[in-house]
Length: 100
Image (cartoon, rainbow, N blue to C red; front, side, top):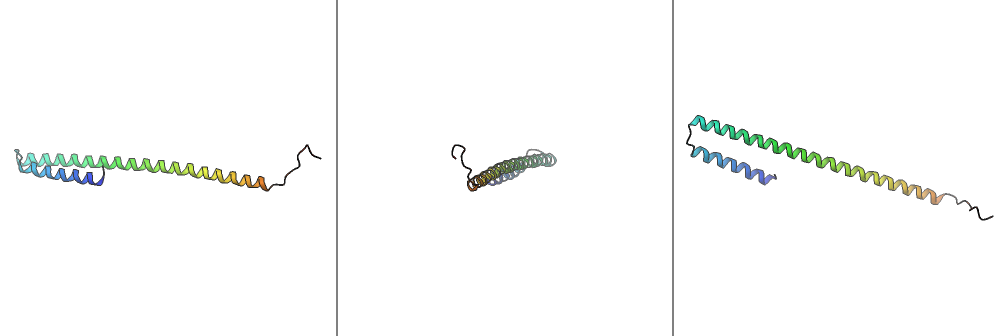
């Protein structure tokens, strides 16, 4: 849920509570209990969404770290291969066995 979606949800929740209070056919105590339970449900929903977002973010961070580590290893392998090729190119050439 993005920031605008969360804002719209909270606005809708507030409007619904306000309308519920105005048109409540129940007693004041029953209405207050109902509102407390709905507010608790909304809080629980927000906590769950927050936990889900944190988990998703942690998974993305882990995937990014893995990708970065693989790229570092590939780069290190490429650098080592380049060094080896340079050493072989600079090494003195030995005469081949077929010539005298």
